[in-house]
Length: 262
Figure 1: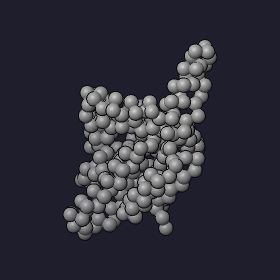
Figure 2: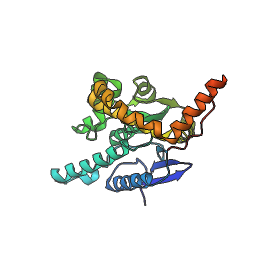
Figure 3: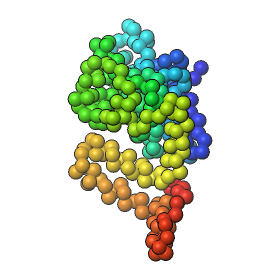
Figure 4: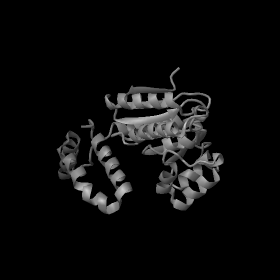
């Protein structure tokens, strides 16, 4: 049985965690994530939606295979997870995560790699690693710190508390909190909207945000024009500017542009 499915329709690639009842991450799911990312890269997808089957998003890593595993093998396993998560984070497409129920450990660390996070009202988030005497192994604590600040990230990691979706939204870790019954519909509608947008401009913004996160504002300023200026040669920008200029000259409202993602 597969633990992760990919479906591509209307230029939205939907990645679904499907390893009931807790959608725990194990080697099979990571391998299928790697394969899914390759499939997405070779498709016509212009946006990605990450979701999960069942009442809970993901409880984190499956610890049972770790029993008796040499530390060198365990490190190799975590490095594979990290590489797959990094590939997911660096997809040259906007990525939306839809989170319901419990989102813990590696599941939270995976959701944090999305660009936009929708959460059901009943969703709860947390780092349970502290209860095992471990640290967040896939970049969770410092990605939370990037969004919510160092002190809040430290508190959540030190206590392993279950943080409600509304609190995560207040501290900018979650973009939107929606009624449980509407989570998938609203997240999918948002993904469809982004898929119809100027895909290469979305990719440029993702690149600039990553450079800023790593090197700060000055470094992003230095990279700005090398990343942004090529957009002027894209079909989307040419059409968008032409329609806006035509409307301005005619004193009319700017029309919606049918972006082609190129």
